[in-house]
Amino acid sequence: MADQACRVRVGDQVQPWPPRYWWLKRLSLTGTLFILGILAVRLWWGWVADSRLRARIAEYRAALQPIMPQDFVSQPIPDEENAAWFLKRAAAELKDNVELGPLKEDLRIGVVDRDTAIEFLERNRGGLGLLRQARARPRADWQVPLSSPVIAASPRHTREMRALAKAAFAAAIYHCQLGNDAEAVETIRDGLAVARHSGWMQPGMVPYLTGVAIEALGMSVVEELVPWLRITPEACPSPSESGPATHQQLRGLLDDLLDENWFQQAWERGVYGDRMICLDTLEYLCYGSTGAATFLAGGSTAWTALPSADWLTRFLLAPAWKLEAVRAMENCTIAAGLAQAGYWHAPQRMLPIASDWQPSSLPQALARSFMVLAPGSYERAIQIHFQVLAQSRMAALSLAIRLYQYDCGRRPSTLAELVPDYLMAVPRDPFDPDDGQIRYLPHLPSPVLYSVGLDGIDNGGVFDMSPGRGAAGWDYDVPFFLDHRALPNTSPATRAPASEAVEDDQQIKGAERQQCQQ
Image (spheres, rainbow, N blue to C red):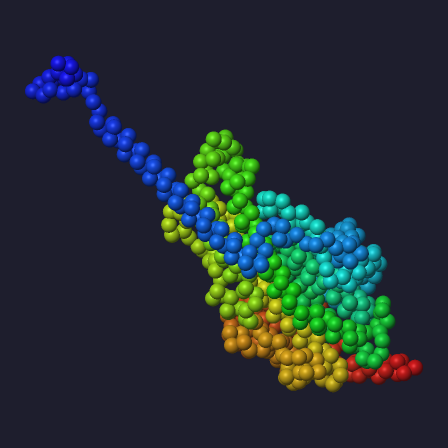
C-alpha cells in the first residue's frame, strides 16, 4: 500500500511521486568524481613538480654551486681593504661632474682643448685618487642586502660605476693629450679595475653586463691611445705625473687585458645569480606573504579587487610555476658553462633558451605567467661576452706591437714575431670556428688587427662602418686600428701621434737614454 501510495498513473504509465530525478543524481555523482579526479591529478602533478624541484636543488648543492640568497653574501672586508668602499667614495666625489661637457663628447684625442682637459683633471683629482687606491685592493664587498623577493631589488651602484669608469677613461685621454703618457696608462688600468669589481656588485646579469660595458669602453680608449703613446727606455724610470710610459707600465696593462679569469667568474656568478633569483621568486610566489596574483600583476587593481582568488591561483598554477622554474634553472646551469668554451660557435650551438620559445602543452601555457619572471635567453649576453673578449685580445696585441715597434724600429711582419718576448702565444679569435688566431694586416695604409666576426668567415679585413656608426659592426670582419683615426676638423690635436713615424721613437729613445745616463 505504501509503495502504491508513492506512485501515480500518467497516461498508460505508473510513475513515482514525487518525481525522482535520477539524471540529477547521476550528474552530481559524475561531477563529484570529476572534481576528485582533477584534485588527484593536481596532487600528482604537484608531487611531480616538488620532486623535480627538490632533486635539482640537491644536485646544485652537491656540486657546491650557489643557489640560495645567503650563498651570495660576501664575507665582510675592512674598509681599508675593501675596493668597493673606495669605489663608492670615488663615485661620490665625481657625481657632480659626470654630466659636464667633456664626458658628453667622444673619448678621443683632441676633442677638447688643453685648458678644458687641465680643468677636468684638476677638478676630479680627489675622485681619481680614490679610484687609484681601489685598484690596489683585489677584494670588494659591496654590502648589498639580499631580501626576498630579490627580483624586486633595483640594481645598485651600476650607474655610478659606469660614470666613474667613463671619467677615468676621459682622464686617460686628457693625460695623453697633455703628454702625460705614464699617467694615461695607469688611469686606463684604474678604469678597467672598475669593470672587474662591478661584476660582483650583486647577483644576476645586470652587474656582469655593467662590467662588460665598461671593459668595452676601455678597449676603445686603448685603441685610441696606443698610437700616441711615447715609451721610455726600459731601464729609465718615468715620472709619476708626466712623461712617457715605461715598458713595465705597458706590460702591466697588457697583462690586465689578457687576464680573462674575471670574465668567466663574473659570467658564472651572473648566471647563477639569475638561477637563485628564479628560485627565490618561485618560493615567494608560492609561499610568500604577498598575493601571487597581485605579485604577477605588479600590483594591478584588476587582481587586487579579487583577493579571494589568490589562494586558488597558487593552488592551480604552483606546479606549472615549479616545472617552469626547473626548466629555467636547468638552462641557467647550462649557460653558466658557456663562457668556458673556446670560441663563439660552440656556445651558439649549446644555447639552452631560444628567444622565440613557445609552449607546446597546456602546463607550459599555464607556466607563461611565470616566464616573465624567469631568466630569458642568454644568446645576446654570451655574444657580447665574446665580442668584448675579442676586443680585449686585440687591444693586448696592439700594445705588444707598439712595444715591438719601439724596440725594433718597425712593426712585426707577422704576429708570430711577438712570441715569446712580448706574448706567450698569439691570442685566438673567439669567432673563428677553426680556433684560428686574430688576423693581422700590417701593410695596409691603415694597419689593423681583426676578428672574423659573427659569421665566422674571413673576409680579408672587410668591415662595415656605416655612416653614423661609431664602431664597425660584427656582421663582417671587425677591425682594431693600429694607427690613429681621423680627428674632428674643429678640434685639432695638440700633439702628434708617437707611432706615426719610426723616427719619433728613435729620437725619444736617444734623448731619454742620454737623460737616464746623466
